[in-house]
Image (cartoon, rainbow, N blue to C red; front, side, top):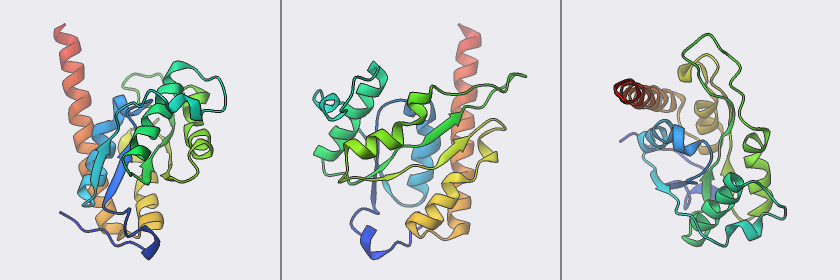
Length: 178
């Protein structure tokens, strides 16, 4: 395991990071969980607490209600550092490059931070138009927000991209077989 160097204010949180079981997590969990695991962090995948949508302060679509419920589950289990990425575009294997995510999904870091002010969110901006490897947002976030040495964060990102690419390939193969 590669270690994580962190500041005093994050010492208690640094060994554990929550990932809500909502929105882009269903597609990108291998990428993000591998990255944080490679940093030596315990990755906690949320459940879905049925009362979470009461924290929303607004009527959202069902996927966003689930996001609130997932973050509430993490909070109720003592997770104080939560990863909610701001994903603008997903990668495309064909010539199409316009794969924008729903604006409400893109805004998840903002409205979840408002609903859960006692949780610290890590929410880097991702545009995967040119593939996973083209985005250094999580490396920069780990260096800046977690105090991770750059070479450690870069190695973790390379591992994460390999893991996500392998899962994407396996899913494509299953689709072709079906």
